[in-house]
Length: 253
Ligand SMILES: Nc1ncnc2c1ncn2[C@@H]1O[C@H](COP(=O)(O)OP(=O)(O)O)[C@@H](O)[C@H]1O
Ligand SMILES: [Mg+2]
Picture (spheres, protein in one colour):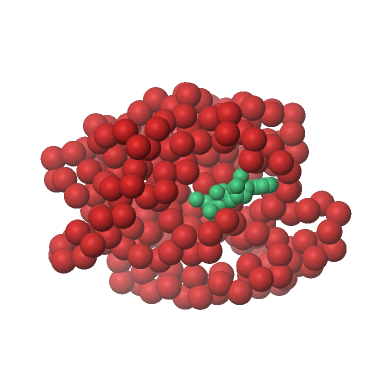
């Protein structure tokens, strides 16, 4: 059965996009057929995968707004061999255009019914807010992964995020499960990073992944080279961590 994982956190800069790309790369390396969906108008995922968001068309904007456009129509082969549903700046307008539609929260879900046989995993990257676009991701998904930067401020938003997520689950998507909370950007030697992970574990218990993502500069150099960290720097601690995460995710039920 196909699994659709939405990566969300209303805080920016916590590693959503990095996690989407590199978890996808890890899952593909384990032999899965993987597609990634960019729902952020900034197109960071799209750029990092070697596609120019200024000229790319059709995109997730068309997928959400045009009934005729199917998921397969917008997929591009990324430089790393993953299938990508790209985003461009048009997506900013989608939020407003969707607003008056009665099916405004389930557009993406409908479009992801089709490719069920084609992929083992679809990963959805979301913008740093809980607007309609992110809600479309949460309604389309079967599972939620929340990256949390391991510093003392970033835990604060996670509880309110989960409150909203449970409301969405109750009203719009009862099948949505919390796959896990992922500590990211962990400075291996910093005591505050350790205590942030302990705090996550005391709140979210066994829902915190055993894998955590260490802080390392390859996370910034790989996207500039338009490659995944797994390709760009396969022996780096970040690549190793994302491959571990992929194993943890593929074993999770
Ligand atoms: N493990 C990491 N170590 C160091 N820098 C990271 C790491 N993960 C992400 N980054 C960098 O932090 C910034 C924000 O990451 P990103 O994945 O874009 O977060 P988000 O999508 O949540 O805004 C990017 O510049 C990215 O390259
Ligand atoms: Mg992002």
